[in-house]
Image (cartoon, rainbow, N blue to C red; front, side):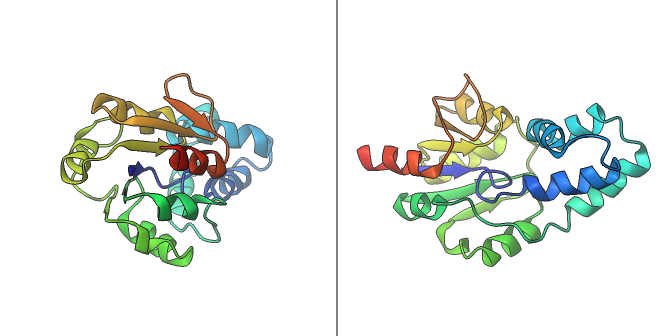
Length: 186
């Protein structure tokens, strides 16, 4: 398998970090579970849903760039080891992605990263996916939001939704042990 990965919320468990930031910004007016659900759609959706002021939005965005203390999802490394090629397409900036991959000791598994500060349009535009697919002849895309899978479908990749409900995906998994099982069957 030759896999295109989303990063944030797919390889690293970053949503608890973002949830805590937003929880503090809204002074605990909403439950962390509710904040988490809206962040899983997108940060811009959550900002709009919770009606953040411009000042609050700027605080959210600034604090989100300083992501720390996150871990890789259990068994994601097993899937990375098993895959023939792994690449990342993320909206996160390159320096943060590279730093976090080093912190969770996974950087060695990736042939290339296309990051948010590269010159590609944001998802769901498929330009970055097409670039990576042409270069690496990818077979699968893994993401935690429909936004991650739309461009993958557009270029013909098999899609895997991680920890989210989505009829759009070819299949959905809650834990990487399920994907690892799928890899072994192929």
